[in-house]
Image 1 (cartoon, helix red, strand yellow):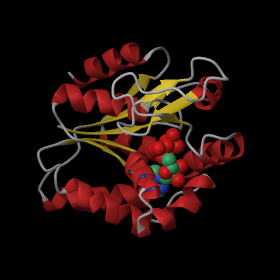
Image 2 (cartoon, protein in one colour; image 1 turned 180 degrees about the vertical axis):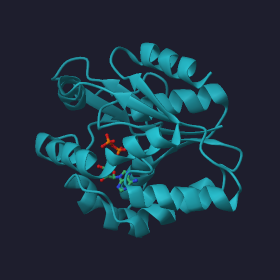
Image 3 (cartoon, helix red, strand yellow; image 1 turned 90 degrees about the vertical axis):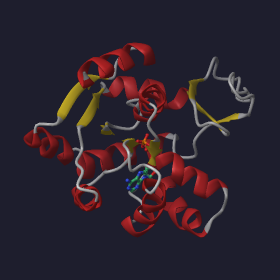
Image 4 (cartoon, helix red, strand yellow; image 1 turned 120 degrees about the vertical axis):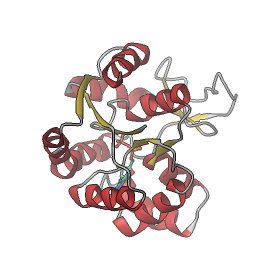
Length: 210
Ligand code: ADP
């Protein structure tokens, strides 16, 4: 199965893609996670990507495609993709990649959330430095929490600050929103409410894929 998750920042793409990958036994290819890993390891690609990420802009395709190419080599039997494609140009790149394998996407999950949900979720978000699992901060003051599953420290994403978030939403509306129409016309779009807890959203996705 080849599935793409679409949605604005804070819609739960990463959380759901990780859950879905685990439950279907497919690799979860998370573009944002790969970029953050490259930034953390100070690789040449990460160093170039950092300023774009921290200002809420799209990272140039040359960087994105290099990271993606390596990862997709191990995803020939199927994948759950989150954070790619994010522009119509990237849609074409993905199609070219799939055509080479004589494959196509099975479904595009469009996670829909209200703006107030985004604004509530993002400032409270903490990410595990080891496994990438996303949590909500228990209280605003407890910033030094550890991951319940791997005990690594949790951190706040550098781009989860209000100015950058505003720009990320703008970038989403300008570059990524047009993909909804595109995949709708192809007949593979599944609109899913991203409201509620992760389990509720996950159950809706599983139902839509059956
Ligand atoms: P979110 O969807 O919550 O904004 P992600 O973790 O998916 O977060 O992405 C974080 C940042 O990484 C984006 O704001 C952007 O700068 C960069 N990024 C991720 N995926 C792509 C992509 N496909 N193309 C360009 N930039 C990307």
